[in-house]
Length: 269
Ligand code: DGL
Image 1 (cartoon, rainbow, N blue to C red):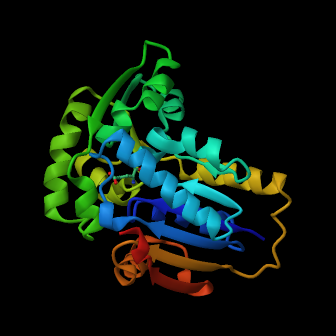
Image 2 (image 1 turned 60 degrees about the vertical axis):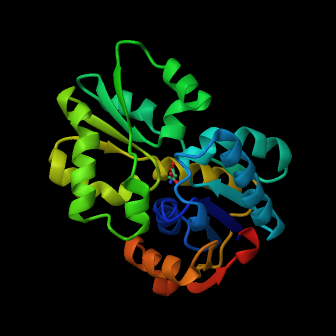
């Protein structure tokens, strides 16, 4: 059994935690939401790198056996440096699934909805450059969406209106596949389906991320559980009660099977 740290700027990484609970329910989890600083997507690379490093060091000091950087933005801006510092802990990142999207697209037109910081990053652009030029990627920053999701408004009319604007260029280009390039966006599936219909293929990488976690834990010999469900600690830099409540709403897995704690980590402020 292992202790897994999962962090994001806010509630977005809950989409990854949900998949982890589905595939690996026996482990203990610490979910750390830096909600006081959300959104990360419009902050500078230097700020995101320094803050992500600080949060990972905190999770390492808590004794985590592996850490998931459950944020595309932090992965793009910070993971390379984090891996050079925390060399003994597997650090698993999240990247927009543009490769699987290209493979699954039939018309070669793929929309990518992500934060500005992810789309501007060298890491994302290097990944994009590895794909054949016949694919057309329509990149769109989802400005304003994360604060609304953080406020529990993922299915509101305000989100629908804003999303409609962001998705327009992707729709106009005739994309048959849309990459959800921010861990907050899987919580917009319903709204996206309302706007784009059922036929567009939505790509999120949580399954691949958790399979990678499993491989890392197997390599460390940490996969042996006793069949019981592990614990989950919800830590927030802003409001742990709200985080816990939102987790109950957003996570599909049965949280009542786990021992749940929540805590405000004010020393980060
Ligand atoms: N959930 C994050 C991501 O995957 C960051 C969103 C934000 O804070 O802007 O990019």
